[in-house]
Amino acid sequence: MFAAEIISIGDELTSGALVDTNSAYLSRELADPGIPVLCHTTVGDDLAAMVGVFRAALSRSDLVLVTGGLGPTEDDLTRQAAAESVGVDLTQDLSAMEHIRALFEIRGRAMPSSNEIQSFFPRGARVIGNPHGTAPGFELEVCRGEAVPGSGRAKMLVFPGVPAELREMWECSGRRLSLNWQYELTGKRYTTVTRVLRTFGAGESDVESRLPHLIARDRDPRVGITAAQGVISLRIAARGEDAAECRRRVDETARVIYDRLGDLVFGEGDATLASVVSEKLAAAGKRLAVLEWGTGGFLAQQVPRAVFAGGLVDSGDGLIRKTLGLAAGAPLEETLRAWRKTTGADAVLAVGPFPAGEEETLAERFPVPTAALLGDAYREASYPYGFHPAIVKPVFAARAFDLLRRLLF
Figure 1 (cartoon, rainbow, N blue to C red):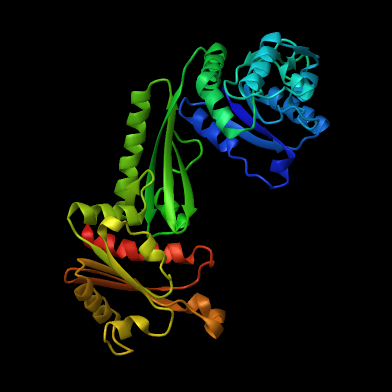
Figure 2 (figure 1 turned 120 degrees about the vertical axis):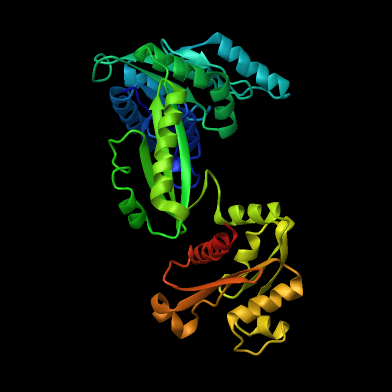
């Protein structure tokens, strides 16, 4: 099976000073034409380490994409490492040298002598132009069994690490070179069709138990399952030569998931519970108000201005019920109805207080009420607080929106 891997170069990445966004971008770009990515590797500016990583990648993957290390400074070692990994020397490309020199002239600057190294490439490599940068990339074809272990051929495409330059070069030539190489080795052009279903109201293991045969790794289409902030996402992916056939298989699997999970599925793609509910309210010309204790304003931030009717945040001093002229112990439903009348909203959401002080030791058992009001219809549910502080607000906001979703649909 034709496969790729991606290597990112730089001490700034291995130290954590910068986050590698290039690998994620290239993986997404390779997914559509059906090129699976086997590995992501990040290596610092160390020549021996880079040579080892390059040789390993070329021995096991058909296409190796490299970003970074093409600058003019002493720690930019990618071109040298690529040459050493396949046992060739560096040679200058005069056209690349003229392009670099011209860029400096356009910018009204004298070219430092150190930039000349950017016109050198492994012998046998072909230059990949960089329209707006001084670091051209290159493509290098390798016959395994000579410089690197294995049999057959592999190709390395090398780009600068500056994200804007990488993306421009990928659009101009990188994508085409990758697809042509895939076709040269396989005689086929593949595509991948994906569809993401978003669910809420059941845990990851519960969802998987309802779809046991769909999650199997050897199944086609593949169904991947991920969890984030209480939302379980199911990514269906089919790979093949015929896009229409891939789409048919994906849609068939999606129908099975909808049948098995029912109203646990709230949307697809990038949909959130807040966006699904807000779009439904907007389509009906309705407005939403919120009351918050524990979420401290987070709930209101999820409501688009076009449907937002107002919000109150209580810090634990009874502000909400005081503002509404209610007794301190007034029921939550009464509080929501009073706020709806005050704002003229069609719907109201509320998240109750989170534990504080000594109560934090019993947080797992601390009940947090959530409620939704739509017209005369009211729903309330209480959930244990037990979540990591980093995600507790998004989870309870999602729970509140989910209550309203079930009233709306």
